Image (tube, rainbow, N blue to C red; front, top):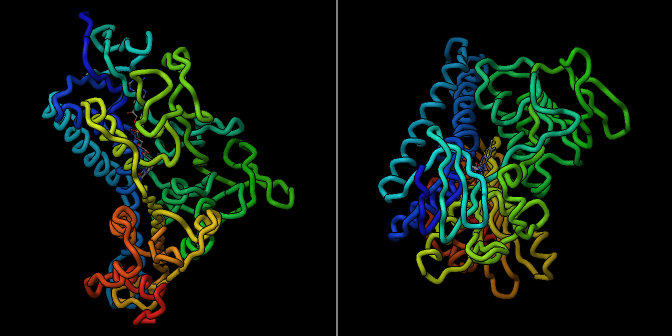
Length: 465
Ligand SMILES: Cc1cc2nc3c(=O)[nH]c(=O)nc-3n(C[C@H](O)[C@H](O)[C@H](O)COP(=O)(O)OP(=O)(O)OC[C@H]3O[C@@H](n4cnc5c(N)ncnc54)[C@H](O)[C@@H]3O)c2cc1C
């Protein structure tokens, strides 16, 4: 097979890699992208998109199920609904398929050459790809590593049999009767909540004292309340020890040191993700590491000249939109533009029920930086839109510098609140002050009025509380 020589080689077509390749192609850079699996990576095939599809279907089912109970206050009654999870999964796969083809189409439109198969480094500028038609050697001036991440396996609970990762959970065709989720981070809780809504008896086992340990307790409270309403049992300060019984139970150790066996048809392990840095020749390049991740600078350059890295392989926050922003920046750098990482905010959304969205600094993070802060918080119990959509739990919170009113951070928890993430990020990127948010007309009746009211509250003159 003939060797391909190109200006830019991108390894991995997840959100980081495919955006990098598309942008480079748009800028006229001769680009090749290699993908071992399907275009779109974790996010599109086994992450963000399929999980949100499943969450939506579960939410719809739960709503109808609620209406079928005699107590529906809206006065809507329906027959007992049924869920055909195999059909739900086919619908989800259809969306994934459409997006796969969309990404491939965009790459072709940008004149990017796509090579299918796993890449292996020969040296810092050359890879070999095992394609269906033989080994393809690709040599490039610049290489971008965008190989993403994979689920962490617990040594005591290796994947297989009843023990599954998020990947298998997204393709189950029947709802497990009893599901134990090991790890109460965002992936475990998003999927655990969805399965509870679809009718599974769900138990969440979390080793730390709080579910969603990266968020402050106030933000987590409405989520914990809803999990209790859905009948989800949450065991904090509890460790998963391994399978017990005939492999149909999980052995746990509770906070007081007692061991207990939890019956389970499926055990979903979501204890984190690790960068995909092993098994494909990367070790031999001996790039500097930051822990398990590849160390990068503010231009996503690694310790080897002409080798960049982007996305999950470079560390936290492991989020699709961070990977995409890095990919776009690196493509422009390769095309000769002057760029460096200057983002003030990488918003994070947790698609639990209700949703959590954060951007910038939390009150504690701001104080830890020695800043004196002004905080405004507005509850959805005082928001008309929240009342009319029967979801009043939650609030919007703004954190600002006490001396200048410069907004440092924004957080919210509430139904559908993920859509506020762009307003949050825009405020931070534009260097908004409390007065800017308070002085902006927010459409009525919307949940976003909570943002304006939170800013007014921080300024000392909230209007609706
Ligand atoms: C269940 C779940 C839900 C998630 N939900 C969200 C969410 O709501 N929002 C969000 O922002 N993030 C979410 N994420 C995280 C998100 O999916 C990742 O942050 C994102 O996909 C990272 O993009 P990436 O380009 O770095 O890597 P990836 O998407 O992991 O893509 C890497 C690609 O590289 C390919 N590859 C690896 N090694 C090789 C090789 N040697 N040769 C060729 N190809 C290779 C892989 O096949 C893969 O396609 C979720 C993740 C999971 C698992």
